[in-house]
Length: 199
Ligand code: GRF
Image 1 (cartoon, rainbow, N blue to C red):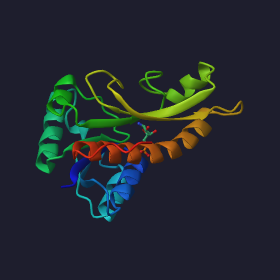
Image 2 (cartoon, rainbow, N blue to C red):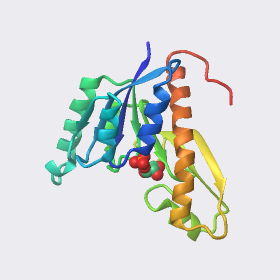
Image 3 (tube, rainbow, N blue to C red):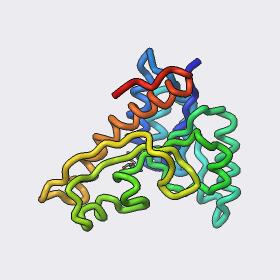
Image 4 (cartoon, rainbow, N blue to C red):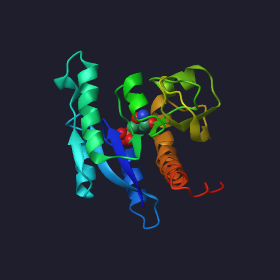
């Protein structure tokens, strides 16, 4: 049985697309069952629908100053889809410890830094300001801490002297698109009881 994957997005969804493209291959241990956004204007929603994947919107602006109600609505949508795995892919809302506990061990996130360095926002600017010689991205299990949780995979690259936050972001995004599908594939295969492939 293929593992059921829900993907949470807020924006263009290029990482989501990389995951969908990989799951479209025949031997994949997982299948997409829902793409959910907190933003009705997410370009990723149309891209998912065009691939025949169910989509849903839970607009956080309908729950002003009430994260509990927003998350309850999110939980209801997700519960309908019965996911084995939830992939955060550019999902720009912080999830409460209560929400995370409900889906413990099932939520994956991609973060544009070499965690545990630079959790939070503006990672490219911060890597440059710190004088780092390398930068990278991390896929990790989500726990109750911000960008914490066990690391499942990382990809790193050199920082060039003339790099800007924009050039770093663009170069790193290409690595994210390779890393996230690879980690999801291994994670889903692991859940099926298949041995993790060796790298
Ligand atoms: C990526 O850089 C991801 O690491 C970060 O948000 C960005 C999402 O881009 N969390 P996209 O929506 O997948 O194109």
